[in-house]
Image (cartoon, rainbow, N blue to C red; front, top):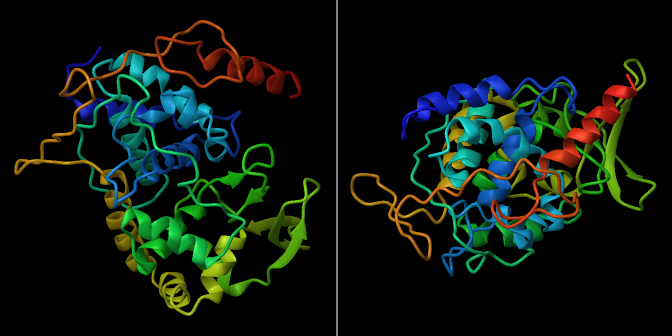
Amino acid sequence: MNEKGNFAAVRKDIAKLLHQPEYDDGSAGPVLVRLAWHSSGTYDAATDTGGSNGAGMRYEHEGGDPANAGLQHARVFLEPVKAAHPWITYADLWTLAGVVAIKEMGGPSIPWQGGRTDFVDDSKLPPHGRLPDGAKGSDHLRWIFYRMGFNDQEIVALSGAHSLGRCHSDRSGFEGAWVNNPTRFSNQYFRLLLSLQWKKKTLKNGVEQFVNYDEDSETELMMLPTDIALTQDREFKPWVELYARDKDRFFDDFSKVFAKLVELGIQRDENGVATNTDNENGGYHAAPKKKSTAGSPAKSTDDDVGPSESEPLKEGNKAFRARL
C-alpha cells in the first residue's frame, strides 16, 4: 500500500497493467483513454454539471448508459491499482489512467492534477445523451462539444484520439480500427482521412460506417460518419489538413485539449487545490474498492451496494483462452 498522495507510484502501476495480451490489440491503453474521455465528456458548461468529478460510472444510471458500453473492461483493469492505492478516488484514477496511457503509447505528456472526489450517491449524475453519436454529422459534433466549451479546432484535435483503439459491434454498433496500429498514438488518423478513399458500408446490424479495404494487406480500416464529417465541413477540414501534415502541432494541441477535457467542472483555488466536494462528506472522498465477489454482468453498480463487474469478465477471458 502506498502513501496517500503519491501519484507517481500510481502512474507506475497504471503503466504496468497496459500490456493485456488477451484484450483487443494486446493493450488496455485505448480503452483507458476512452474511460477518461467518457467520464469527463458529460460536462455541461451552462449548468456546470457532469464532468470527471464524482466518478459517476460507478452507478447504474451512468455506467449503464449505452454510450459507455464496454467501459466495464477499463474499470476492471484498474481495480488492482485501486487495491494498491485505496486512498485515490476513482475520479482521479480514471482520468490519470487516460493520461498515462496516452504517454505510454507514444503520445504527448498531458498536464494533470489530482483532487477529484467520488460522489457518495447518484443524485448528481448527468442525463444520458451528452456523449457524441458517431452516426451523425458536424452539427451534432458542435452541439455536443460546444456544450462543454470547446471550439472547432479543439473538436478536431480531440477527434485525433481515434488513432487509438477500435470499435466493437456489440458496444457502439460500429466495427473495426481507424488506423493500422491502434495502440500507437500518432497523426495517422488525419493522414488516412485525407489520403484514402472511404466507401459507405452497411454492417449486418444495419449500422452504416465508412471503410477502406487494402487488397495487398487484406486489411480493412473504418471511419465513423462523424469522422468523415470533419473532412466535409469547411471549418473543420483546415484543422484536419494541418494535423495531417504537422504531427508536432497535433501533439501540442491534443495535450492542451485533453488536459482541458479532464478538468471540465473541476474548481480549484489559487494554489490549484480542487474545491469540489461530494454532497455529504466534503473534501477528498475516495469510494472504497469494488467487491471481488461474483455478480450480474448486466449491472454496473456502486462499490458497496452491488455486485462486482470483475467475475463476468474473468469468465469471458477463460472462454477466450479456451479458443486459443
